[in-house]
Image 1 (cartoon, rainbow, N blue to C red):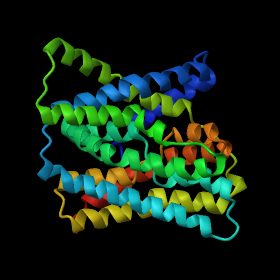
Image 2: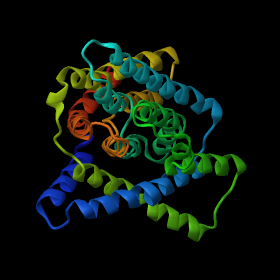
Image 3: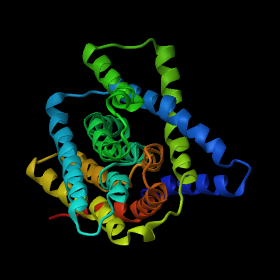
Length: 297
């Protein structure tokens, strides 16, 4: 139960600093950009390019992660056909059911399995981030008339992950001073990213659609972990990888979901409330899922 306590405390620290000190929202908006466009991509590139990534050892894990992601997308999109669901609110909030907080995922992977865990979760990110972004943007684009192919091609997380994979497969090794510098830059990504998550927590208008909100959060924190357990068993994943797949499935949703909804004309307050509840809920539920996954059959 104490596994995520240090990460949770960093999130709380970000919340307190943003709300009750001169380090208010504009400071953290700049920090989020720094993490998203520099620190986080460097961490992904460095972890993938320097780790041992045997395709035979990682393909099943990547397929499991993709299976979890596609299941979440299908379930979230199916809610659109439930009578009484507002199309704009659904288009805004559906992403919460299948997107995941990469900052928390990387922090937890490092805590569970060190550099190898970061490399494993980065491979899941390489497969799932493009799929998640397309699925998140599509319903909003359909309502607001936005395109999304250019945004996907310029996504720094996708670019850095694919670049790290290419460097690894090509056997590229940076000079030691450059490698050490990149490592130090990457180390700053996780604590600052987690504090930025806390700074972005907001209470929103969940009362606009409480039934839809409950369904989306249930998919994110209940149904997807159950699916991950089944997939891990079906693929006979090694215990460390099965635990990481379960952790991935039980992650809090992406904190950037709110930004995407607002930027594309969606119901921002509703999504802000979902992100807040999912983040807090994940801190409680995720350790429980990990304990359940580690229990003997």
